[in-house]
Length: 140
Image (spheres, rainbow, N blue to C red):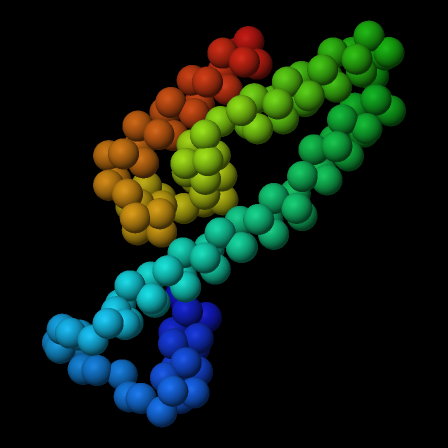
């Protein structure tokens, strides 16, 4: 959130404008509140993408570590389980994947709702649906 406000401050300085008071409704074509929300949303997505890149490798490493500790049969089964999980996550819709990954990242439903511009109840339903899909695909 802090990065979004810094971006807003830089943008206002670059255009030579001042931020309107908090109580003022902007009638201009540029909606600062909407722009600020979009910047924060994009930053959250970028952070999630970065998180995915950093922690996707440990899944692969975990399957490799399992291979070192167990029998060949167990290794094949574990690798197959990780492959099915990865494929199941890829088959989720974009909103299901975003909600689920943000929840896995520690965000609460209301925080996810604010980030994605959804109702809190929709976030709950989306996460529940995503978990059911993953359970079906992974035979859990």
